[in-house]
Length: 377
Image (tube, rainbow, N blue to C red):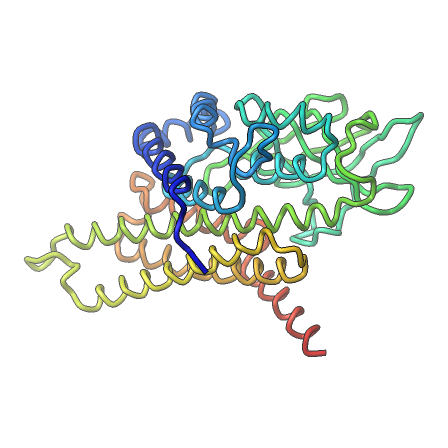
């Protein structure tokens, strides 16, 4: 199997890397983080101009590439700790619309995403559900030919900056899940906005009798669970790539520190114990990259069960590697590793949140265990 990037993919990688180096230095990121929702509309539009927001979307609507291109972009966004909602909007939201939307929905919404005029957030998880996709208490009932939504969604990532929500609800007629395109400014919606541990925006959403037309149904009625499983597998693969980008940047920052920090008359990187720890961090990052490549490759698999199993395995290992590398980097930097003035602490916070997003290590190990037991039976 060829793991080398094509020339076009290398150009994409270089372009995003150069953009982040020029436009998204750590000081600039800290200023964006201090704004109301930790988001820069100007940066979002620049990403659109660079063609980044078209990655992974259908060519007939202005998109380009697929899972590998998403992986390339996510690695660079991770290394730069970019706050803008690429994962929520392009991978999750636009991905769902591209795979399950009607021709009219695709034509109306996908070009707006690609041009940087629209941001999307997926409102699915609810209080007490943890990571169980099928546990949804929000309800959709038909009243006079319209859907009426009621319920609560929790920790909706990037909802504070979104102008379109994709909301899941249980159809009272069939008892199955459906997805709906919802304007967050619609009557009956209340958003409680806040920041997550890594400084990004999220919101809890209350839906009280939100009326929707039938044209706002996304995908087949009652078929949301399969659509969500596929979308979240793609999102998890993208998160693994982001984590790899962060881990490699964190390793480089730690290595630079060991080379320059002088103690007892020499750079601390000359001490063999620290060299061994740095080598272990490097090996964990290499293995995490291999698992990220596995997850990316499985995104195109026709066997949904195999796709889900392998992507869960990747997420479990990447979460383990992220915790190890983050802890080692902070410890090797000493007290400075915990300070907000140093990028190391922000890398570690983001890795911690990636591990918890869409299922932590224990959750995905449990899924792998269930797969093994089912196959052995």
